[in-house]
Image (cartoon, protein in one colour):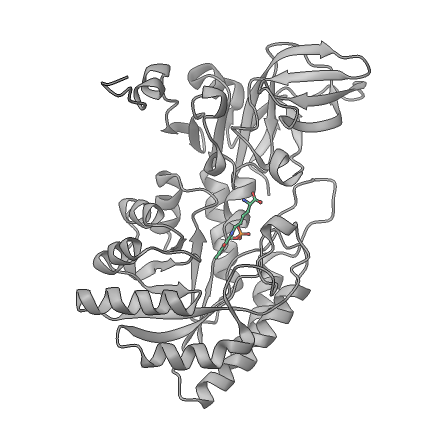
Length: 421
Ligand code: LLP
């Protein structure tokens, strides 16, 4: 079920018309539905029912404190990839015992912060990282719980920039070297091996690559146990894709994904961790933008919006598709017009969509980018000195700004001009 629907002809976030939010916070902005976030978390939790498990929200998808708190309050864990994310998760009230620290290049300082504050597990990705973590832990008089991220050499069949499970990718330790890596980890005084970790990529639209990776994981679990390692947790990463086009066939549901996990790994008696980001937050958010101009080009019509690639970079960066819909429901049978939909930034890459059919729009009209709740605000920048756009959360008929738009003065005030200049 979708919480961004037309009610009496007006596009609403849950029960709040987006035009009402626009009137209060200005455009562009992101708006998230609390009900959708909750629903998506529950879907994963239910999909793993009957197993000991922890659903760790990959907060890189949407690191807003309010989003992380909403999920943390439901019992979610969090997957973090930097000290900044770790500290944000803690600030959102998530206990260290529910935080998993992933990432290929953790610094010693980041390790110290997490060990000091309390951490469920580090997912370590290389032998030098193991050595560093052991050193840091010993110096603090602690023992770091670790899972080793293995690279299973599986093709996730997704966009190249977000595939992470092939041998050529920088992630994990080659699975062929796993036995040696675990032997080394077991010898290090500051580490305690607790499990195995794998994450093969993002926006996967079929289960087969997961299945290939999880089969290798089951085999490795048995081999490692045979060698005396106490493998009690399996972290399966994130990656389950979402339908970006409403017209298309939807990717597998969390329920099918959960059934597959139970089928392949259920008999190992391990605690299962998963790290979904996109599926929890993606379709829980939209970005709303206003038409500045409609411009007739030589051979096409441009819809020039007040949002740009700095606000939502996915189309420019991954050729990603986002459905774009008007905030006012088109009249039945209204003749669509064909637009190239662009932002105001000074490069042609600032194009959200080409040859997109929309009802006739005029300057001042609002449009919404669907499926923008994951990797939207999270990846925004102030390129072209455009202040970061605000984020709003809706629950039922109420809404709140969960990150305000910085003023121009605030943005300018972040830079320093040296006294000697
Ligand atoms: N766990 C780890 C270790 C990850 O690296 C990621 C995502 C996740 C979990 C969550 O994956 P998800 O469930 O969201 O697919 N910016 C790109 C996506 C990058 C994903 C990076 N890692 C995009 O906009 O498509």
